[in-house]
Structures are given as C-alpha cells and as structure tokens.
Length: 593
View 1 (cartoon, one colour):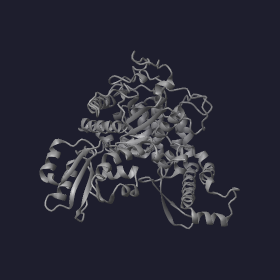
View 2 (cartoon, rainbow, N blue to C red):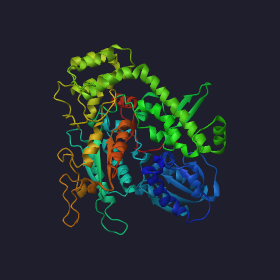
View 3 (spheres, rainbow, N blue to C red):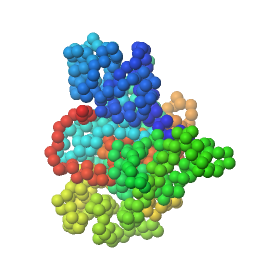
View 4 (cartoon, one colour):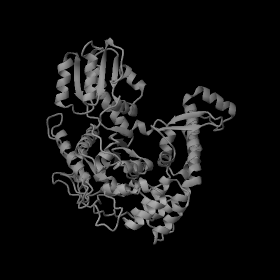
C-alpha cells in the first residue's frame, strides 16, 4: 500500500519541480550542481531524496550561503527565494572569478524588478535561464502545508507590530502559489467576525492575487474558477483545540515528547540512544498517527504482521531461524522490524506520561471544553471542575492550560476571579500567558464590553458518535469542513470574497448553460478540493480532521495549511511573547546562513 508521501501535496510539488526545473536542465547535457538556500533546502527535503535528484542529473547539492570550491567546468542550478540576500550571494559567485560555467536560476516566487536588474547587470552573461516557478509553501504531509513563517504570529497579533500588512501580503502570495501548484482557482471565503479583521484582509489579498495570477492561462484565455473552495479562518475561531491534551498518537507525541524536526530520540534496553524520523516514509507511522493511544499499542504488532504478510512463509509460521534468514535477505523487512521497535518505544513513552500525569488532567479538560461530563450532564459550576487541577502538583503549563479552558468555557471571567487564578498558578510575573489572548480576539474578561465582540461557533450534534470518555471534544474546524462540503455554511457568517464556483454556493444555483442539475451533493463535490488556511497556526488535531473528513467523503479532498504547526506549549510561548519585547523589523522569508 502506498504511503502518504507517494500521494497528495508532496507528490504534486515534486512533480511540479521536476517539470519546471529539471526538465529544463536536461535539455543541456552533463551533470550539474544544485545550490539551495534555507527555504528551498527544506522544500526539497520534504518531497524528494538525494537519489531522486541524482536521477535528474544533479551530482552535488550545495548551500548558497557557505563558501564553496569553484567548479568552473560545471553548470550550476540555483533554486532560491527572491530576496536581496539570495541575489547578493548569487552575484558573489560570478562577480570577480566565476565559480561555475553557467547558471540556471529558478525562483520560488516573483522576483522584484530591482533585484532582477541588479542580478542581470552584474552577471547577466553567465545566466542561461531565469524562471519563477511559484512554489513558496512547504508540503508537510500529504494533505498539510505551511508557509513556514513562525514569526507571523507575532507580526500579526502583537500590539507593538507595525508589519501586519506586509506579513499578510507575504502570506497571500504564498497561498496563491499553493493554489497555482494544485491548478486550482478557488472561491475564497472567510469567517465574518468583528475586529480584528485579519481573516477578511487576508481573504481580500488572496482573492485579488488569484485574479491576477489566473487572469490569462497558457492559451491567453481568461481562466474560470475551478471546483475548489478556500476558507480562511483566524486562530480565535477555536482557542480550545490547540490547548487541550489530545490523545491521538501524533498530536500526543508532539505535545508530550521533545520531538525536534520530526526526530524522536529514544533509549534501547542496553542504554544506547537511537533516533527515528517520524515522516510519511514510515508506513507504520502513517497508519498509526491518527489513532487513539488506546488503540495504538494493540495495533502495532497487527499492522507489522499485515505489512510483512507477503514476506512470510506460506504457512504463516515464523521460527527464529527462519526470521534470521528473512532479515538477511530482505532489507525492507529489517526496516519494518526497526519501525515496530520505534513505535513500541514511543507508545510506551506516551502511556507512561498518560498514567503519571495526563489522565488526571483529561477528564477536567474535556468537561470544561465540552461543557458536559462523560454522562452528558451539563457542567453547572466550572470552578469545581478546575479546582482539583489547581490543587494537584501539576506542571505550571498544564495548570495554565486548564485555567484557559475554564475561561474559554465562560466566554471570559471577572477581573477579581482572573487575578485569583493567576495568583493560584503563581504566574503573577508571567500573566501574559493568559491576558494576551485578548489580542487574538478571545475574551478573557467578561465584565468589559469586550475588546472585540466574540461569538462562539455553534456546534454539530455528535452525540451518536462513539468516543472515549477522555477524548470527547471535536475541533471546531471539523464542523466547518463538514458544513462546507455539505453546503451548510451560512453565507452571512462565511461570505465569499468574490464570485464562487457554482458547486459551492449556498443555494446550489448553477449556470443555465450547465446541463446537469447540480442538486446531488456527490455530484457537486466530485473531484473537488476544500482548502483551509488557519491564520496563526494549526494544531495536530485539526490536521487529523482534514484526513478524517476526506476519508468520510471520498470525492472531496480537504487540504489544511497555516503559518506554522502548533503544539500547546509553542502556542502558549507565542501568546506570552506577544508583548514581551519591542517588535523587531525584518523582511519576511529572509534566510539565515
């Protein structure tokens, strides 16, 4: 069975890069050197391997910013972001003594005229080709992308920021490159709320840039909207999901285990340390990542057995001696055994955390988030639910998370109560963890007329769905995805920025020239895409929802993206830092050596 990496965004991006870059390069014979900046290194690493590059005629991959030995007999392919820093580094390679025979330049996005002119003026004679390929987003998973702008959170929401407009402009450009890569010209919608209106502003920018990009197609014909819809939502739509302790495998791992750059470090029984990369090359990870932790430990042996079934002996029995022979002959089987070891270790780590600490938190968190207990009885006094968490010697971050869920459940609390809670958690000098949510438009104080008016999203009835008692909460975005696909989003709450494809308008009206009636939901969403962009970061639980809704609907693929991927602790740190120091000025997407 194919893994996620063989489908979805990663495959689409790699195909686009092959067609846009390497097909050109192959017209000129000979091996070439590929030179990348920080962003394009991450981009290529996400969708291909070195062996893939070698099959495209690339012999060496180099860092644009590092000192490199000249190879004057070889041609170089430069794949980089169109920033002043990248252009200057490129010019340095050719200004005095050329390092390479010729240069083929590919920009991730539109190159400003002044930078292009500077490059042409200084080393134009060495440039054989210059092209913009319109890929300035990162495909993180088969259905997940990011703009790789973690500083966007502060740039947009900090009261000290002066770069909101520039940041939104940059994000709009990146979202348009995603649509262009998918060959989609979607109808753009946003969640209509009062100030702050960042979602509306971003929707307007994206819609205008899409119109410019798709004004004329390759045949110089005006391109019409495709059967796709792009929803832009603000992080304030659902402050609960990224704060809760989530108990599905991937979300739980990134919350409780210090995983950096998708690398999980674990110890073997002999005390030695090992590292494992958690990505879509690991078939077991793809199958397990959205399962509840209660199912994971029992599923690991079953899945390994299923994956390797074709490699076993005909009678299905494996002796120690036979297993040794199989492992010698089949590297793929060794890889599966190694993956099993990784996931047994990770699952055990997570269960230890759950039993020591998280289990006690989950019931209170779920009751506060859902507003009812596991038996369906309404929580009449949220403070009685919160108090045991505050009295228990939990980690400070865990207490902050519980306090926030309490405040969210009430849609804000009194100033007197808030001060008592801050004192109880002992964060008097770090009260920004709680207070700064107001800059996202989430009410913290109920007594005020509210810094922004805030209305909670109405929820779908899921009372007939089977859930674990400690996992009853469903992210708001899952409701939004399902409502969008079923054409149930209220146009008053989710206005279109401009004209929308007929398949997605609320009335299901279609052009008179169209022959089909368009009344069947299956007809309407056949082969369509729903793209969700979350301004301010997306949580792993929300990413999971994109896969679940796609699986349930089959004919409509949900793709979700954001400025960055959040963990509960990283979000709390982002909130805390909104007011901690003056805003620094810098260019979005600028690379660091």
